[in-house]
Length: 560
Image 1 (tube, rainbow, N blue to C red):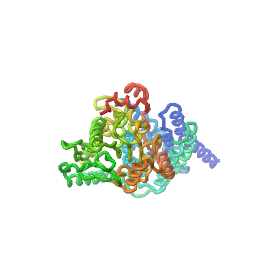
Image 2 (tube, one colour):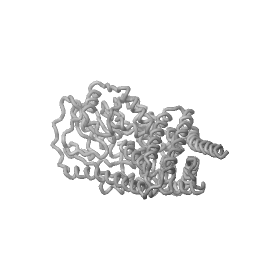
Image 3 (cartoon, rainbow, N blue to C red):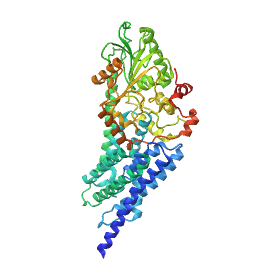
Image 4 (spheres, rainbow, N blue to C red):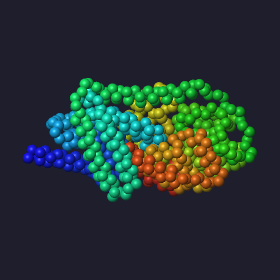
């Protein structure tokens, strides 16, 4: 009789755990499918995930969807109560049979209390992913998500074991955390391309695994024998903080040392006017440095001229520049490009080809969009910024979507600014100009250009930077590379030369398939896109189409 009673209680607990995990995922999936925002389906597979993935999930919604500090505080308190309750109930239902279980009040209190430090630990990675949605540069993802995973591996006992601060972390528990990360990622791979009706089904299946993960995690933590004091979690978090800060410091110090060792020279003497080769304007990306040396990233009969983020000198030649010169508003950069394209066209008598990377690709596409009839034959974009401005933040002194996250980004930037070689602040002119024109920039890359041949080289690593595959009406090829630096790699240089000579860009299907798989898998670790059509209409009028984009951009002051 006693055994049957215990078994019945165990079955009821497992049913309760399944109801919590599956129910949380499915409820959010139904809300996202019916209300929005578009593309947020992959986030729903981790609503019921074990600690601290559920906290990380909540933070990314909160980072985007608040308009004032008061609203942020109220939403944070509500999320704290909901997440604390879900965590406490999940721990209670997952408690192994035969082990004395704390009272429900104690479980709920501990889970809620642990949610606060876990949220603070995971806030910086969430803010970095907010920045990724603003400027989709994949290195932000590769900093934020591994950092969040390391925090999860170290800090998950805080919500389960009251003695977490003095005990080790069992390898079995760390294995469950890694398995959860993998399964949630696979759930995203299934949910991202699925039709709306199928997203709740994927969320439900993932919820079944998450219920198992909760049970395995709690069993691994509460079923271990008592041992001597071993403060693994506090020491591990301190070491992790040192690793992140120290690694960034070393990287920035090396960048600054390289810049200091190579002071800006005087402008190079004007080269002879090209007579035979095709003129090519080479545009580097954000934070790039050019000292006036000749550039030849396109092998063959091409005469390359470097675009200068400082502009042209009195002799009509591009001026050397450093990383700080790239931090300018888009309007200023478009004006600089218009001047330099015209100068190169006048000097050669030929239409210019533009080969541009990262920030440079955005500037070049924006320039051509607002300058119909520009003397440009072809545009090759390497590592273009896919769907920038998926989130928004208000200028300092005002309120608006993401206002508290803006301040969080500024705090992160201020912490590294003394050693950073460029301005990383959300208040930098470049980032502010992207935010101001965000509704117009989202569809920019996918729009055709009259009279200009377009091509794109998409690094495979950049698939983690935006949740949906780009819909490009021109040839594009995925290449196995990281963001930036494509114009200094021999295979990419050969591709660019072939494109400019023949107008053909081969795109192997296997790299395209890999790009889709990586993009869909990473979608669950993004922040949700800010779906505020009514607000956009207040800012810019009707939502833009490719046909109206040039007019809308000029009206917004983005033209030269």
